[in-house]
Length: 88
Image 1 (cartoon, rainbow, N blue to C red):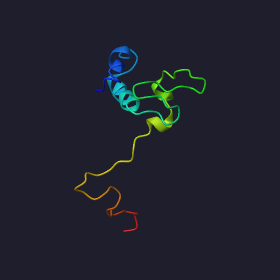
Image 2: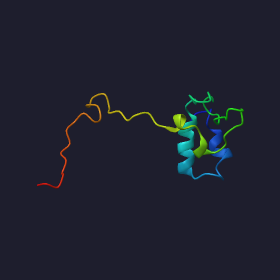
Image 3: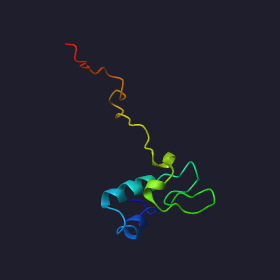
Image 4: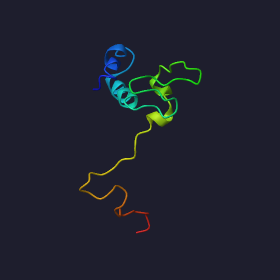
């Protein structure tokens, strides 16, 4: 837990489930590329109003980075996977 996002667990505990709080904390740990909200702060509308809902944060902030494999393994998606197309 970051000091910038610790408030989530106390201020929003009655509004979201623990699972949702974990997701919200992960989202708010990133700055928003759309509205430039800093780490630990809600996104803002064009007029500057805080968007105080987890599901309304800008999509660019909510989208996770692509999955990567550990350095000692081949990158994800580069290995052959057999496909059963039902024509056996």
